Length: 292
Ligand code: PRT
Ligand code: ZN
Image (tube, rainbow, N blue to C red):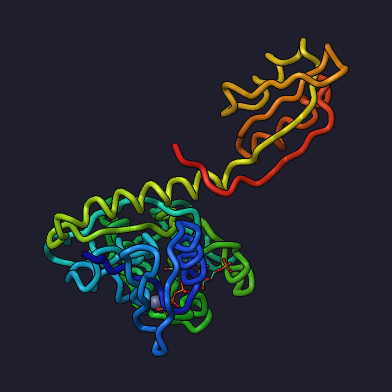
């Protein structure tokens, strides 16, 4: 029994998708045409396709799993007239962006009501349509498959709804981001209708590995020396490190070595307080995998 996973062939999600699978211990033998790749260390084969084709391929069971942006999947679901046999299994830590409304700098934006009767350029007409309907606003969607940000300058739309990550593209086109319609990141999806019964175990195994990889990416292994009297205080400064390892330091009865796993952000937030509490010889190491 083997499963097939669709990933973006070349684009913003390709590298991160492959990197994630690699960190899960799955290596692939690359075929020449790079449409299919055989999973050598896990019964999972790769299918490289354009991201726009992924939802349909998954719904039709051409693959049982897929990694794609939540924007792409949602657009497909909302534009279909029937229920799609697709379920989200995990949100992934890449492909972060947001689908936002942006207006020319001269536009007098006064909230979503300002959209009434306007022409809005977007590659996501179904998501935009859903957003407008939920607010009872009537407007015209101008569907564009690319270069949405130039539509207002060309006079083909009054404003846009497009993906934004750094905001540089909007700024370069004198557009202001005024409202977020949807927060986006990549996700792992599965087909629910035609899924092979003996595939369930494989999926569980894959999900556990993904979870281990993602948790590790956010975690650091912290080692430091501390006064014995400050153990409780320092433990409290490293949330996520409920039971740190405490080791004696030879020749220093009043000081100990503490080892703990904690979130990287938490560590930076508290470094000054850790020092004030008497921590020294602080070492922060990356965590490769974390398995519960
Ligand atoms: O060839 P294929 O059809 O497979 O790829 P594509 O060109 O359609 O998609 P691609 O590779 O551009 O994006 C794939 C997915 O990456 C998207 O569906 C999102 O889920 C995610 N993603 C994350 C983004 C961005 N960030 C992003 N910034 N997708 C597009 N953009 C574009 C945006 O449309 C705008 O043109 O980048 C520009 C804005 O970026 P900033 O940094 O200037 O704000
Ligand atoms: Zn695409």
